Length: 348
Length: 277
Image (tube, rainbow over all chains, first blue to last red; front, side):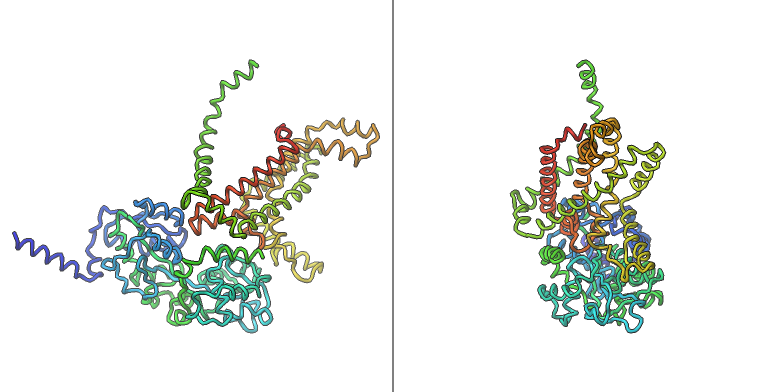
């Protein structure tokens, strides 16, 4: 009797000691489990489905159901109710910090998710980074044929680089850009000197069109409505692919991360964690980068990405060295007040 | 009396529509508005916040101001069209109704994009003006009040044209002839006879335009500029970005209150009965 028990215990210990990769091959042990994956829809979620969900389903026998789009109000209502419909959700870094503080998330189980595969900058106690994107200085190559702008300071130099500007219609990233342009070093940015940032932004306010959606930021360049501005790396890539005369600078690119999280009370917590583990594998992240040109959090994924896509990624060795990750913790505590101030500043 | 009674007995015919409105509109809207007083805790803290932070009331004022500009511009543009529709040849009327209805069937988003294409720096209008040397620099027509006005007015024109048309079509031409027989100049007979008779349609149309503009969200976001921030955008921000249903509810109540006060003023001056006629 006792021997059986002891051997069972030993068996359990052996399973616990098995490395992640080996255990992931324990095929079909999740047969009959259904995991609901929610993200932002469109081409991005399609890429995630092919790159994370399908390999996970194949390896474990689980069924993954796609849902979404991710919506803050919906997420809150679900996690607040204690029995969410979603098991794994793709959220922005900004929301991750808010949701972690409000107790809406399950802690990442590092016994089930091999977070060691990722760059530590993209790992959080309550979420695991899946893609990185960056705010860059984008410019029209037609307007600045004799010398391209390279730094955030150039965005504010209307004499040397005349032309309309575009800035995102929110304080997040815009205030950072203003301070960087004014000479503040990235490691001295937070807490932001808000007065100084708004004063700097005053310099270009009259020349600026504010964008509210990413597609709009892209369209403004395509329509030659603006010649320079703050824009996401993926959007410059997309516009350039479609033939727009646009380029970007990687100087002091401001990086932001999307995370996979598990809402508090998920009925399939363990399976959800294992789906997240599948996401951290380099070969799966390579697939996403090839499909939609979003940058991997597992830096080993970069080397196998299509060479045509690589220069547009913000987590290549060069670009990651030039950039820094935005402090979502700062924005968690200041977004409300600074959004009010942003609106007031625009109206003034 | 007899007929009225029989109709009242058929009041159950209202049931499907009433249920739909109750479940799909009154319930959720009531729920949102009630959160203004209950979220995060019972009390008036959300209204206090709106009062303490000047930006909210400024945006509210901004919204009313924009609606107050859009309304007369739309009415002035709609008036001659409705007039032609009511008093022109039947063929002219058919064409005009068709032309006014076509954009009415088109998605709001598509029309906003179309307006942007027309007004942008390298758009149709600016290319024309530059090409003929009328201007040297492209005119700033987009991402400012001009773009916003163009967008709102073109979308809302049918809402004035049709009520005006129905009022005008009912005006007996004999009234105008009588006025001129009695010695009134065309201008005088227009202002003393014709215009007052169009008032019910005009006021209905103007009210629709004003109230619709107050709630606009897509048009100011796509065609307006930094200064054309409107209240619906703030409500959306509060819900989508901050999950702050309380403040969103309070903003909605302020908007609803402002609209109700305006309709009340209208009732007192022109009379809603007049409009319903």
